[in-house]
Length: 299
Image (cartoon, rainbow, N blue to C red; front, side):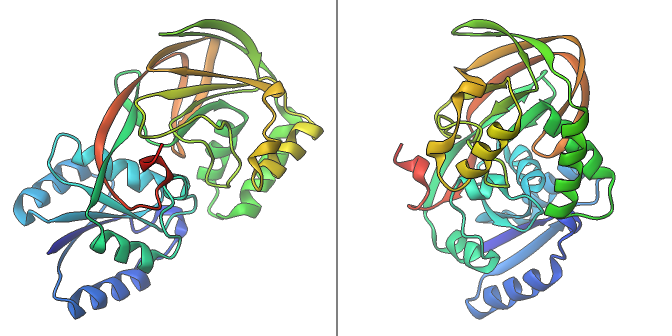
């Protein structure tokens, strides 16, 4: 067996070197060949695809957070290669959603052992951008923008920006047209969900399944003290998820229009301001190495 590790050295401010040393020792012990590609931010897709052609691995291992997972998945689209996820980012939302073992070395062992490969959906946004997990406009996108610029990472930094945004947040109007229905709402946040929860564990909806060929548009119409308390409790028990504060629309395609451009983030990466967002699901676009504890295999 040969593994190709795709490593983002800086994702989430997490040092990947200790894990990689353990991973290489494990592979050496069992006679597994290894190759590694470190992302640099320059021509990564082309360079990774060249390495895939040269190395022809049996499995690809994405080491990092949601951004690294998305990058690896997009690079593998249209190829016969399947990837597994080792969660080593500041937010590992997709890994949590797919019930990937939170211990990186144990997650690697699952990838090595597993023969289960399933199709994972991708959202295509404005024909150019992609999302595997959750994208949104509104309060969270502005928090992500500030968080990206701050050299300090972690939940305390995120919480500080969250509190600042709560003080200044203003609602905005959005008109949504899907392949099933239309609506117009005034919201504090609009989200595109291929998954149920953020990396923090706070859920946005109960319906999302990243393997069903559908996505959810979530419109959050109220953010106040009681709503925040319920959101926090929903992290531990989804029965506290309050749909009175919002609306969920399920779709294969959707267009969101705004009165003026709003800031958007996709999978933790800010992509800019847009007055129109067009979304389509690419069903089963990624070949994912998973296991029987993935709840969506049985859905």
